[in-house]
Image (cartoon, rainbow, N blue to C red; front, side, top):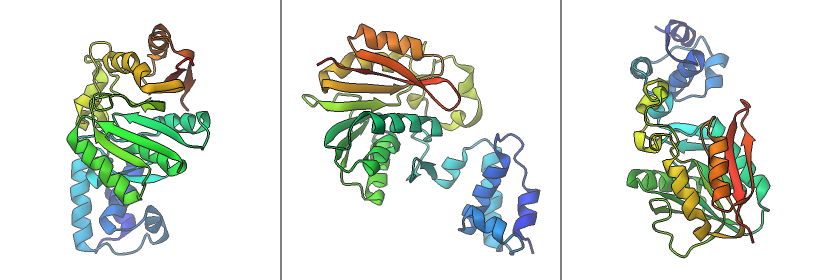
Amino acid sequence: MTIIASLLRAAELPDSPTPKLDTELLLAAALGKSRSFLHTWPERIVPSEAALLFSEYLRRRRSGEPVAYILGQQGFWKLDLEVAPHTLIPRPDTELLVETALALLPPTAARVLDLGTGSGAIALALASERQAWKVTAVDRVLEAVALAERNRQRLGLVNVTVLSSHWFSALDGERFELIISNPPYIAAADPHLAEGDVRFEPASALVAGQDGLDDLREIIAQAPDHLTPGGWLMLEHGYDQAEAVRDLLQAQGFAEVHSRKDLGGHERISLGCLPC
């Protein structure tokens, strides 16, 4: 017989940056329990079926597969989202976009566009906090569109519409008070693409040309045609790209251009306002 405490002690994830957390998440999932259950009942016997499932989870994690893909879910903001290998795993840094957007616009009626929505994380987080906002979430990957729609339906958020669109391609004539995006922004030759969880994420959602700015350039160039006067464009980018993104925004005629820092002190998002 194997107990919870001994399984946790025996599990080894030497290459994980968070081995204890990963192990607890995987064992809790195998048991169908919460992480707090593991600490409250460390002497409980683990059924053989759960032990076998845990062993398989560990094998996959040791191979480098992200915990979010193994379990098919990831927390973001206050939501639990379904995730899959054809979309990025939502990360805490991206919550800065949500925080900034909520502080930027009043809670009254507004039209908001999330470009490259992936799992729907940004759009769904905003919609969950602002019932008066009408949020449109688009992605060019059909599997991502289906995933975001499943998350929308499961969360019961009726103020979100999920569409298939390559950036603005399906949005002719539509304008928004806020356009927000976490687009691909990694340079094609960046060595980090061969490290950690990123190895398992879709390159199409990560890489944007030789300098990582191709998609940011395209969004910034097209956004004025889809913003209302006084509307905002808000973008996540790499830790070392803020100056370049501000220059692009200013060159396109945006006003009040500035960047904001994440918890690590890096300028992680940049934004600008379309002049009235």
